[in-house]
Length: 130
Image 1 (cartoon, rainbow, N blue to C red):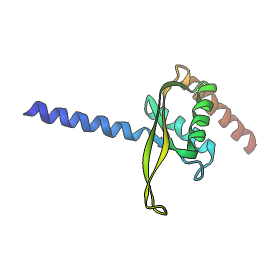
Image 2 (cartoon, one colour):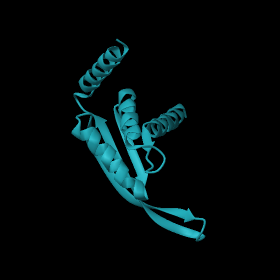
Image 3 (cartoon, rainbow, N blue to C red):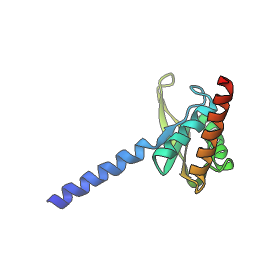
Image 4 (cartoon, one colour):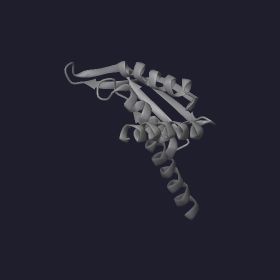
C-alpha cells in the first residue's frame, strides 16, 4: 500500500513541476521581450521551459523561442502542435484553435552568457551614476 501512495505522490510532484516551468504567451497582454526575459529567468530556476500559445499568439511564441536560440540561451527540445476546442460565448458552440507548445532546454553556455550580460548591465549602471 505504501508503494502505491508513494507512486501517487511522485506522480503529482511531476505534474506540479511540469506546470511551474510553463509560460502561456499572449500576443496582446505583454511585450515580446517580457516573455524573452521571463523565459531566461525560468531557465535559471529550472533546466527547461515550456512556451505555449493559442491561435494568433503562436507567432509570438515562435519569435521568443528563436530569439533565445539565436542568442545562445536555449536549445530546442520538443515542439508539439494540436488543436483545442474553445467555447465561443458569442456563437454558443465550440471553436477549434491551433495550439503550440515549445520546450526549450538551457544551452551549455547559458550561465556564461547570463553572467556576461549581467556584467554589462552593471557596468552601464555604474557609468550612469558617475
